[in-house]
Length: 521
Image (cartoon, rainbow, N blue to C red; front, side, top):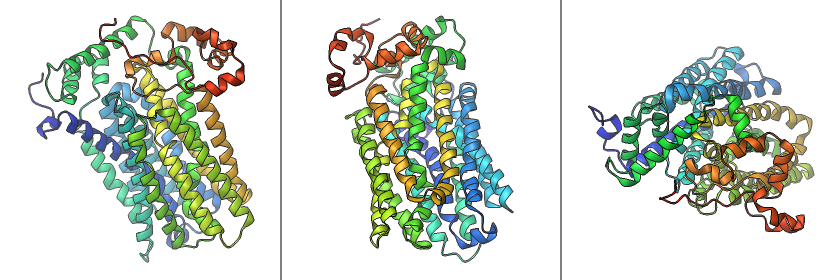
């Protein structure tokens, strides 16, 4: 293979230990931007923070919180190209390094505008990390455990959020500016650990094979299967990836965004929609401004941060069931059930704030906890799993970069407008996001195919079309809509049923996936 063993082999990591080490490492990447998303929620309500920044307005608070998303949006668009050039591991290192620099600027800020600069720079790092980590995880993971490992990764994100909230709470007892500078400094330490750890992990075997580094790619695959280069399963996986890469090259088309849009429009739109509704469903109304939400409901000062901390623990626990369920129930069932519970919880939150009775404070806490639990079980982890699953290798980095950019664009809008809406439309803000939950339910029910247990190289079968058929379908938006609503043209007989009966019988919008047999060409 190579003259000297890779660093992870020197640590004794092969087979399952290597796979789980990679998952833990990837979770540290999402822990980082989970921490960053939550850290501002507690410090912006602190007296020393408010005094230092001369009692910032709702608009200024919204800008300090949400400007990170501008940086994340920019680099998430660039991350597709960067990930193809530097590789998945190199992009992880770069993202962690940039994030650490931004965190240092925030920690030693001298005023409003230096805080803005620090948040934007950290956003650059977050954009790279949030794009490349799901790609790296999906390309390393075996198909029968891919969903569970991605959900474990999301749990790392929410642990990061929870740690930030509790850090804010305990630091709120410090009677100085250190009450908000210490929580900001901790993210620098985490970023440095991630940057160092990225040098120890293996590169994605799919990226290695795609860049003609076949020997290294085969070595990583063999190591993931126990370290035996003659392992039959490892050799078969290597040959399948290699053949898929060659097929894409034989098509003769450049790997551009234009080609991706022309050939895989439906997949790109589905990937982008999953991330858009992850934000429109209201999670960052709670994540960014949980203490302000609880203050609005009647909890005051440090008690509001405490309630946010208790809520964050339940949020973490809610991310555990998908570890088991996502590869058994599938993606669709989890997304659909989560949207229903979230919609009811948000409407109930608005109702209790509207009637404003003595029980409102406790009722809002209960509603927020139910909402967060439903999100953590469904629309939290799955929009990070789904895009890299459905995009083909040749444009995976670019497709995921667009979906992640969509996340950060809507993330910015929610973060910026929430404090303004809290003052302008008050309790109506929560039913508004409940409406978006209903929209996401309809979107998944009618348009999202199931991807449970499907190897990445066989994802074309899920969409019922090869590359040529997909190109033809994408040339006419009208015909695409007809094909989606009629459960594909191959099932023309079923279209004779009444539309109502089709809706009742609908399980998966597309042909059923049939695994490719070992002797299939």
